[in-house]
Length: 361
Image 1 (cartoon, rainbow, N blue to C red):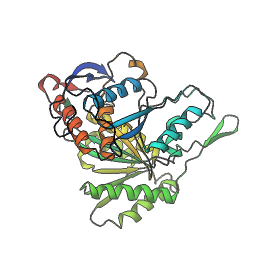
Image 2 (image 1 turned 180 degrees about the vertical axis):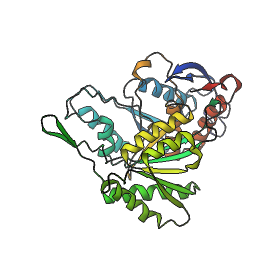
Image 3 (image 1 turned 135 degrees about the vertical axis):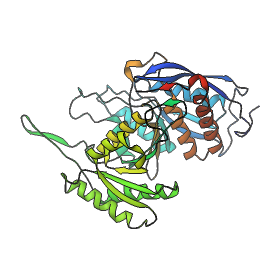
């Protein structure tokens, strides 16, 4: 029979070594000690349905690890699987995925490839999903993990990225042959909204400082508006220190003195760049989870959104980021006991002697 999450304390995870993204990582997942083969029976209000979007590359195999682990741990979550064909010019697949997320409220997804050889009117499926559902806040917790040897220790940075506008607005055209104009959209409402989200999160997490990352010295109107909105919101949170930093200096400071940062707030494109830099600081893209939040929906995935096609179907992809993303999803669903149990098992396994030399350089 299935017991409560508190009683399932002896799930043991062993992860082997393989090479992924130029780093020694831990994979594949083998849960070798379990006694619960069937999930608890469905009951009214007792289970959650989550949209599952496998995506491309290593996405399907990583999500299979999640499903296997959820089954062994009797997590009361059922998955509605929706496949999206990234090579198709039709938007039917992504519209079906969006409908599934609207129906269920929550999704767990692998990255969907955006091929730059597609025609100009082909929109990124990942971007289309985020804008259609108004998933305006991307949150990445960049944290040092046990057993992963990196240059900088004890890193603990939260990155908040505006997720629906900026350079990712899909507005570009070739007005004259050989001259392309790409529009960057910054709005007051969305800038105030993401700034307020960052400061509320900082207060809830007991953080002391929020740093706005910008390029207002060059883009005086666009990034200037974003920075001004951040300052306005900061005035309503006197208990939290606020400062700002130009994006090029930010990347240098991150790789040299990362401990100065606490919560980082930035527009869309800068968030993409800084997130990847921070992932490299703590061990690589296979280790860091990410979450996308809107007013009504939430989508969870790996933080750096790599498809990993070069290592797909070889069973060597690091599952850690996706497993931790599933824990964020469980926390969102208020299934904290299951989230803490799985997260604790992952971190304990990484801290064992046999994986203590996992590293990236």
